[in-house]
Length: 74
Image (cartoon, rainbow, N blue to C red):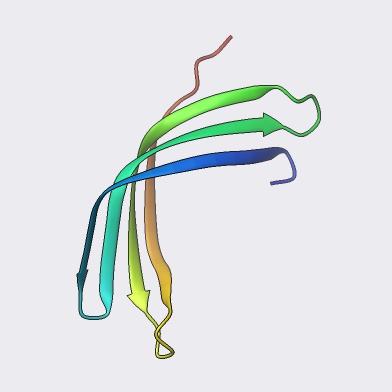
């Protein structure tokens, strides 16, 4: 994150759990801001996250996949 800051919004569509595994999928929109010049880029796409419950009961991301639509070139 030394080059860009990120403002991301997740829109979950599906969230399922079975035992100690869970997944969530949906869409996202993101604004990246270049730290050096303040220029922004917009990105949208879809994501899937797999979670695994830890022995202490906390859920941690085990795997994630992001499929983004590249920002428009100007």
